Image 1 (cartoon, rainbow, N blue to C red):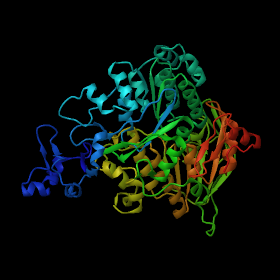
Image 2: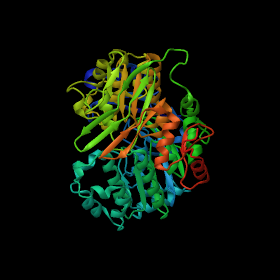
Image 3: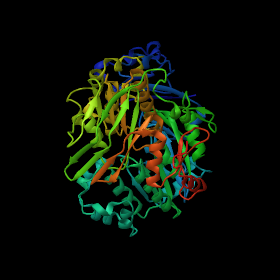
Image 4: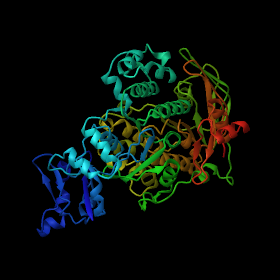
Length: 603
């Protein structure tokens, strides 16, 4: 048995706790050795010596900041140790295997090592094999992977014969480091003479003269994808390429990447949208473990089998259960949130509405929602979805039309873009959640167990809200919004920056809130699987992005999705095993059959 002890640098506050973890260590008390002591020479934080620690868990229980994690793993797993971030830092076991001419998908929770793995494969991070007391040579790394496909790959890295093009995860950092208009930046990145053509395929030709600082999130994403593909590289790595993109754009970038993969290069994708990952990948690796503590890379799976195993929570090749309960989409998608035995009534309705914002016009068809209902909002970017949400929130006044509420409604609203300015200065994560609902920070309350703990916000309680990363701020904003005791919940793109399990946790709690409290939620979302997972009815937006938008009246999910997909010329079927929606490959037998039947959304 090998033992991993991790101390979270962000959570540990030694000056406030006086190293209580040391005072309770039984090995320290019995003087048989030192399992944990204060490292006053460097970090001023405790250091746990894993070879001495007996794993009693006393230090974990006494730590007031939940900063210590100790886990036991099989001894043979150490032979697969790839990298560790210092003493008592995160540890990664195994690596995904790149294959020329194929797209390799990577699926797993945030914090389990996906970004670390792709940085190693890109040659940006040299793996230390878990050895911290000396520098590891490439000869040792190659010996570690001898007999596997990674042996040849690392030989190429060592001989500098692997050149990587890496599309980063947090695209909002780009305008801080580069300047210029879209066309100039594409030309600078171009090494294959294809950048401008790729840009046209992604619709960037309309904004070639726009400064990068004035781009939306979706425009930035497409710019980086085109720039990455225009590089003359051996391996192309895309970290969350679908973020900020609408459904049509997600399919377009998928087709583009699949087409480029035919050049017999290595392609690796980290993606949390299961429909996109399924559509794009040839096979996948699942990374599982304890976020922030350790991650283990699974053997390769065929994409359908791998995703279904992930949803089931059991990996047969590893004989490992990674989740207690399976996720079944067919049952959840077909269940109505509203109890048929309870009384339903109109909760909110609106007239035909016209909203003008500068040169953009939005027309909204009259509609209504009932108590206990979740309404999805879907359509292209820049078509008016956020405008509609702000109208419902009372932040925008229409030129014509009104909202009719049948009682005074308390509204809880999560905007599309989350920044430090959303949180009052000096407030900690715990303070923000307590202001939203004191029950959210009480251990064992359902809000704490189903929302706060599943988003790992309990480990950030002592951190200042404004100091969080973009993804952490998103989780805090969602948790604060859903924790509030409201009558109407408005969530604009809640899945951005969240991993699959976090997205599903959010979906479940939205359903539970609306069912128990008999309230209503509107969710604007681009992830088709999440829309399918939570929606009773859906509002489809269409029109000319940036110029004119039209919002249809809410329709039953199947009818609305069929309408949306017919416009996009995309067909979706349900997986026979898990019930999850799967996008058909264009021109495939099922794609042609469903289009003939005009059944774009098969259930």
